[in-house]
Image (cartoon, rainbow, N blue to C red; front, side, top):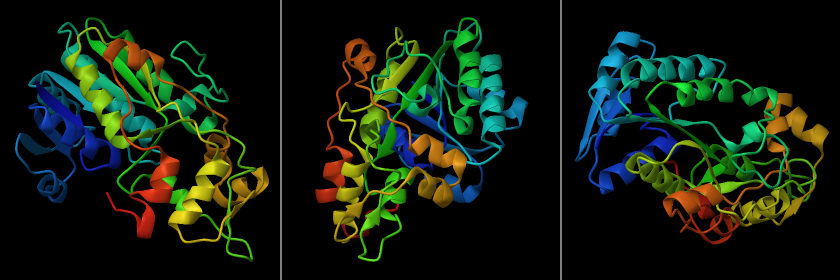
Length: 298
């Protein structure tokens, strides 16, 4: 397939790019400048500098592809505007063609729920409340195969924002890392390479539609994760914090999503696509893998 990909230089997008390359797909990486274009150059990859808000240019590029994956996000107050711009361009380019458009949201939109499935109600905290309405536009588009991918916390290869947050946790007087809240909340997690594998499977399977939750089924507690992060950071251990401390540290919006108690086993992805996580869990990665000795920068 000829696949248009946004966010190819990001943590998730770079792994999607690699997965698609390895399986023989031709990728047009839509990047913001020449520096990013140079960074994604490789076999089977064509980098195109484009403003994702330039509707005619983006529609033209998408129309020349067999499908598209949107993983780009500025991670700030403009994120909703960018998602909206890309969705609208995809609808214009793909409506009536049946081509696939894959859009990423995240498990956080389901709110507090330790047994999340695709049928679970959306109960999005304020920080991510804009995500699902925009994604739904892709699902509702006429004759376009819209698919929404909702991963848990992505980790792996020493990277990822949330694992980095745990590694950089503040310490108490004995140098123990301070957990986010009491640490009893569970997080849905997924290795970024397993997540990229799911993206590829969805692209290649014409029957894949609707929402797909992606998690490895381990659903560790924040206490388990922070204790393991302490090993990676060479700290003596980890101690519980409080919800108030988390809000003071990160701000109310961000703290709210990290204090959610969540879990999923990605049953639909396993049943529909034969997807299986094949990488170590985040606790194991902290203790024995890519986050030791400073981790990576990918």
